[in-house]
Image (cartoon, rainbow, N blue to C red; front, side, top):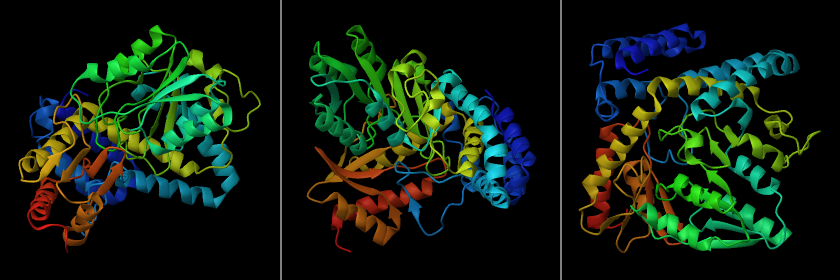
Length: 433
């Protein structure tokens, strides 16, 4: 929906229609209806600063009053409506597990697949529902037909589980891994494109790209790199764990052949939920990771032979998807970029403090990373938690050394002001508690 007035009306209507949302219906509905008096024509950047609206979004979560959670990049909490849905479906299943799981809830997978595909901007026949990015990307990595001597280009700043998957294929099958190492942050598409292109040879079969690097929030120009790869008949895998349902794009916009993400990050879906995308004409080229009667077939569902799983968790994804759609990806992206820059702008000129993340919305969004001269990331993280009850994460990976800060839609400016005070204190007085 384009207008805030229409958005608020739909939010209130949907929440009012959920019997399972009775615990939040009245306060949230009233708050949103009160917010209806606001402007109907706010742009995403204007919407990002509407603190009254974001207050009611915060109220939609069960935010701890004792901890400021700024590690949403690892895993995000679910809104109350999703928690209630999962609880309802779990109790339903326990009344008659095989009946409610296999005959009732299992029927909800196809509508969910269609709704996820709509957000992803692709065919439902290209979407598999699974548990996380690791599962999706491992399925692709181990399912591709590669032989000894085939080359794969990837980055040392990738996610460890993916790096280890490729190392396993190297050890098992004799493929050759070609490593790139980046200095971050960067605000130049050509820097990345040229580095990847220079690594391609006539033996390169796959390039593995991380859309948003989890350590610093760096965004890569995936589509431009993919275009160069396709000119050379190289397949493109994209790790979208930290960009999907945060940045305003559709999967086909990335020009990749394979893609996976975790829905328990920026969609705030139940823990252990994700999706995998494979371009329709590529499905037959990827073997199913788990047993299937047609492991080399062209049906995306061959990747969902997981056996017994949490149907309650899977069906609750739909409530997080609805909640996300009500906010809108463009508005969410604008808000989270605003929050990242809010604290980053305040600390970037503090003596000894260094930002390791771009402030440009083209090259970063929610995730930020900072370091303090002469101090270990883990010690900074520990003091923020011990003294200020702010949960971040210290990063020491390859050439990246700093503290990662990741707010979410429920994060308040007051929370970030406290973070700034904490960083000022540590930069001036050190990490000793």
